Image (tube, rainbow, N blue to C red):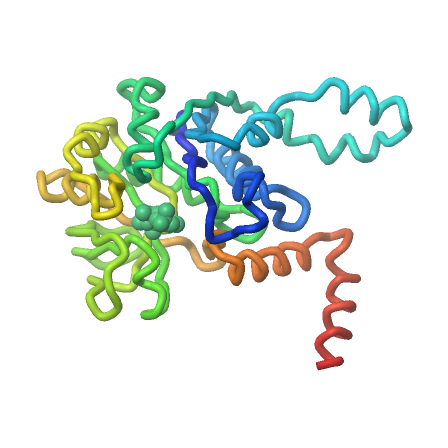
Length: 293
Ligand code: G1P
């Protein structure tokens, strides 16, 4: 089981302005919880015990969220709001948090490189802090990827899901060399133009890596926006004959990408409808609103 994870949260979130002007996009709520809490709970359920956040300026509320707050607890206890204490259950996760900053925005590959001293010689998971996998984040994908990593002695394992032809240009896209739900990847392209994608299998923001990925990242040249792309580094793993495996999300393990308002709104509504306490009434209200149209 892989114990270490890197969660990059340094992105500026400009596609979600104005909501992200003074708060990280990873802290936007989806139903009751901030996005990044789903990511952390997913990792903890997969056996991860140490999480390194790669942060940037304006991201300190993430650190505050995962810290114990004795004053809040004391206040809830003293004002007979004990039932609200349940909402802070996640503070008891057996996960240890570390934080480091990517001072200059040089892309996802560069952000991951900031985690090299944390990882040492062990394999590690990368989970993007703005993507939730599975309804309410209930996904076992990272545990499955860690099994595939060991079984295939891979240098990297990448989670993917099929997307429509219009969406391939938004993501990294893999070229499978074998069939099945677990397959060998021969090549990858970051955000291919429509019609040029090697498949419709898009990278969903969950990866397992051997530390050799850091050597590859160091060799990646910045793209035309000055960014060091992680996809390029994985591509180098393929080119140098290392084994790179793909794992498809299981049925029902849809990836919720909170990178733009359309998918943010859709995800919020779906998760709120699934809330056992508030979902049923919200459903009624939505039905009424829709009938009005
Ligand atoms: C990044 C990766 C891309 C991946 C995507 C998943 O892109 O570079 O390969 O498909 O995350 O969300 P970004 O969304 O940061 O532009």
